[in-house]
Length: 91
Image 1 (cartoon, rainbow, N blue to C red):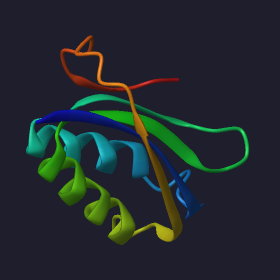
Image 2 (image 1 turned 90 degrees about the vertical axis):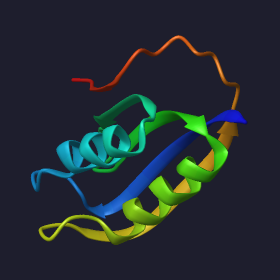
Image 3 (image 1 turned 90 degrees about the horizontal axis):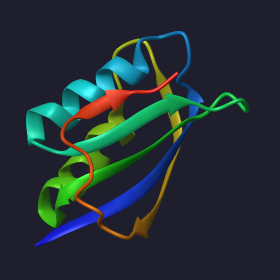
């Protein structure tokens, strides 16, 4: 079942390649959507795809990459649109 989630990651997640890590994780799982840095120092985004794959994706975000220090992962259900063809980094 396709679904979507909006997410916000807090901690040391800017300046450490975290958006690229998020994009790679999403692409590996076949998810679509976007990720970007937020002005408050967090990283935010939207992921669409199979519910089980989104659960796996969120678990990966909680771990982060080797240079990040994830302090929190917030997510909330979002309406699935199907409009995204890939997973992109937004600036």
